[in-house]
Each structure stands twice: as C-alpha cells, then as structure tokens.
Image (cartoon, rainbow, N blue to C red; front, side, top):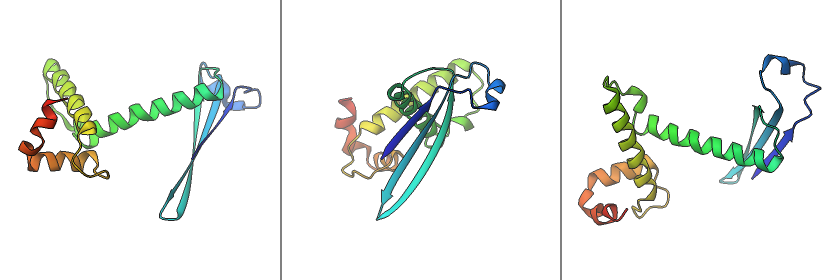
Amino acid sequence: MREYWHLDDTRCLSAKKDWVGFKSVAMTRNTVTRNGLSSVQSRYFISSLSLGVKEVARAIRGHWLVESHHWHLDVTFREDANRTLNKHVAYNLNILRKLALNILRLLDVGRKDASISKKRFILCCNPVKYLEQLLTF
C-alpha cells in the first residue's frame, strides 16, 4: 500500500533557505507484506514545484520508474563499467541495452517470477526456443 503526503506551506522549515527554488515537501509511506511480515518504508522529497498530492504521487512514481530503468541498465547490463571511448559507439551501445531491456520485460519465459537477469539467462541458454517470440516484438 502506498500513501502520499504533500506540504506546500514551508514557512515552518528553517532549512528552506539552503535549497534554491524550494517550494514543497512530499512524503511517501510504502507498506509491503510478504509471507505475513510487513515492512514500512518512508521516503521524503523536496521539490521546486507546488503541486497537489495527486500530481506529487504521479511524479514520485514516475521518478522511481526511471530509477528502476537506470538500475537495470547498470546492474543487469553493467553499463557504468563500460569503457568505450568512442562517444558514438557508447551511445549506440546504450540504445541497444535499452532495447534489450524492453524486450526482456516483454518476453514470456513461462515463469511469472522471472527477473530480468533470470530472463536473460534463460534466453541465452536456448535462444532458438524464443526466436519466434523475439521476432514478433
């Protein structure tokens, strides 16, 4: 469960002078229950926007979607370890990694719990089995 709070009346915050353009604070509390155990995570955000709580919630979810994408590029494809010196080649490799990531997200390997890394491994073990599905993307 996700809950969101938004505060745009920042007069009570003394540190606001340290952040240029500071206009609001948002908080999200995520409650996750797995195997009967619940964990609660709270995150705080500062913003230069004065939005309503619905727009703040949308912006936060959008931010984590982008972060998740970058995390997969770095962890699954080790993009930060890339030492390609030619900028055009590095740019082209980045595009190919993003394409591969999107294909892996869409790929059905018959397991609902398959992570991106697991799908990549399964695909590499038997590419012919998934060739037709890959060519339809």
